[in-house]
Image (tube, rainbow, N blue to C red; front, side, top):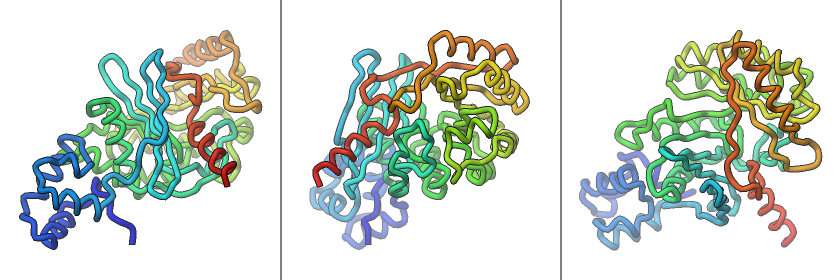
Length: 348
């Protein structure tokens, strides 16, 4: 039986474990204060606990289950990308994005990705497994440790399709927002999806104020079929209908993420169509100039990107262009993991 993750162990279970160890009940509050108040998971740092108890915690629970295996810092803007090695030797990526008055964490939800967007390094080798709630919460704590403080915003935009790991993701969202735990506002948490309609509707049913970001990447099904494989691709109309339901249930506008690929989805006609969709469905548009990972796709020229943005805005849609942060080295999501996997395969 796999060990329990200390970060998501229910208080009642922790209390029962303490009774078995002959420890007083108040130790449970001491432990949870370290985790949720001081953002500290390692038992050896919990100095108000007896040494024997700290040793037992480390032996009986994952605390933590993963470690930072690789760290890439962008000196230009302080963005840090971490490759985390998990307890089974697999790895995911975490990004710490500092700004003047806030810190944003970009978290992964799966090891690999089943969607396989053709321009993305995350899904090159498909899905290995889902992350458990405890592993995602450990990502959060490691990100806070890297930042030196509790983060302000979380985006689940790292490796994986979070809505295909729905049950574990919901556990994480509940822990992050629970007043007695990490007490984050749902408005400061963004859940990204490639357009998995059943998951969008399940998230809507929670009626919580999380932000939904849909990686649309095309305003029509013909273009989108060139970018996203058939297996998990839903029609654009169904995706946007689900986004409408989400807006009605959560009270939050959806963001349409749109990665610009040269000669694929960057024409003026496509910009006009995207703008019309955004206005019709009361959605915001976030344009993402492609970060090249292979020779298959290229980033549009600067003037094409600027013209596309102006055309979307002219429709009346709210549009932003993602500020590019981080080092060009292994900048795109999934590249650190892909590089590590290639090295591991070469060593076999």
